[in-house]
Image (cartoon, rainbow, N blue to C red; front, top):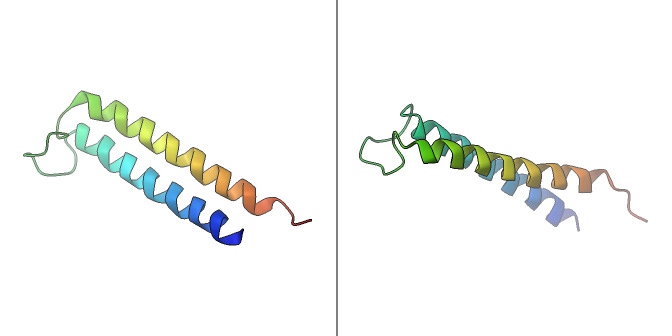
Length: 70
């Protein structure tokens, strides 16, 4: 069961980082100009949503780590 908790935490962090990168690409801050995400307002919103989803997964993983074994 401990592997599942750690996996949820790692997956949540990775998804959050990806969401932040997508958000910044949509705002023309990072990434190559040839990317379809670059300077695309839709990806600003998508990035925020993806980062929030990653935060939820991270919170679940942290929450599970606080639950005591019975």
